[in-house]
Each structure stands twice: as structure tokens, then as C-alpha cells.
Image (tube, rainbow, N blue to C red; front, top):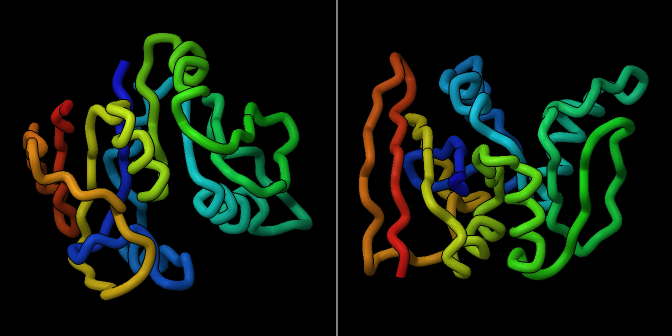
Length: 183
């Protein structure tokens, strides 16, 4: 089992613009063409509250009169200090504070499959701080935003990450697969 940060980002390192919009990404027609391949090996999901609210607003409750089912079949942990809306018939668990106390529960629920850190950068940074982040798969787009939600909020320089692979996804994407070195 690996803990993987899988996301799309701009060339200048943002995962959303200053208004929490992903319009810069959806202009390409799809979030990431490797998603179906990736999600098959995911047993559990962790995300921050801003990401959760974005999914609710733009997917599940995009049309409040006709809500769609929760987008993930995997158990999902939402890290938040606020009370947020729930989704009927979805395995969503709200937690607050440090990621360490719930990490074993998440691993157990993943049942040998990988844990996907959906975002955001601060939540992923907390997993990194505790040595719980194994890999990053970042699909880079040919876009510059200059401000917004950062890809990552921690410095990783010593030891550097290992480049596992670089993949060109015609015509608009380059995907970096990185292994995070353990301190």
C-alpha cells in the first residue's frame, strides 16, 4: 500500500486558481486521461475541506434540484475543523486535527490498496511531515496562473524526490511520477 498525491497542476505550481476554480484545467476537456487507470488501485481517499466543498459544488450538488451520487465508491476521509454537509449513502468520514491518529484506520479501510491524497497542498504537506507520503503523480498542464492554491506547501530539497517516470500524454499533458524520499 502506498500513499499517493495524485493531482493536476499548472506549470507554475497551482492546483486551483485564486477563486478555487479549475476552469484552467477543464478547458482541455478532461481532468486527467490517466484517471481510470489510477483509480483502480485506490482503496481509500483523504481530502481537505476546500477540495470536498469543490466536489460538492461542482459535481455532486452542481444541480441541487437533481443531486448526483457521491463520485467515489471508496471510503473517504475529509479533514476539516468545520461542520460540512454530508452526502446520502456515501462512506464519508469527517475528522479534524493531525493526520497520524486516523492514518492506521485509513490504511485498514484501504484493504491493501493505495491511499489517494486528493488535496489540497496543505493536507498533503501534513502527510509528508509525518513520513506518510510515498509518491506524487502530478499531471502538468501548459498553463500559468501566477496565484491560487499551491500544489504543495512544504519544502522538499534534501533528500530530493526520485523521478520514477515522465510521461507525455498527447497533446496537452506531461505527467511526473515522483517517489518521496524518507528522512
